[in-house]
Image (tube, rainbow, N blue to C red; front, top):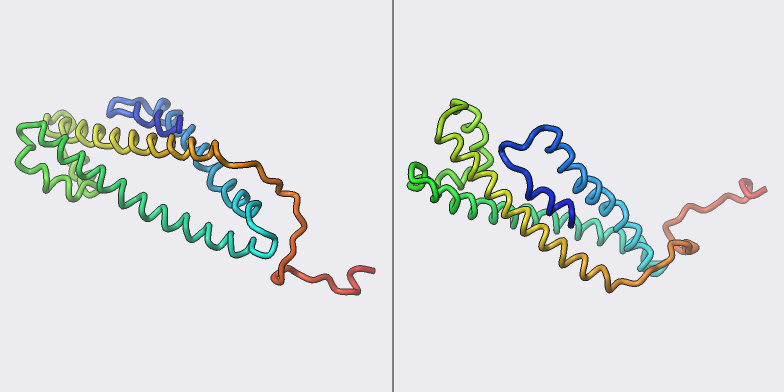
Length: 173
């Protein structure tokens, strides 16, 4: 949650070291979550259903990532169009520019550095991303509240499954 909130501080004038450190915390947090959630789901399942639980978790994580990218893209494009409408020179093309926001990066790179239109588009882009980070921080806060209601489970359990490797009698001697 803290990492998503820190991403809100990113702006077009953010220095490279600040950019790196502002992305470090969410990267560490999300990286830890990806690995630990698989273990937690296996600890919550019965021994016979651990394989199924892991498979369903991976499927749901992939589905959630797809939905998250789609929702984040819709939020970004909608807010980007709103931000562009705030600039009189860009207002009439706001919808068209927002529809291909990822392709717009190449257009921005081709614009002269000191062009007022380039500055306006970059600022609108950054402000639209801030809304995405704010929504993600809000969702992370809801997840934090839900996580407070979970109970602790032990990972020390003997595995009982039909899918395990069996030892040969010659290996046991």
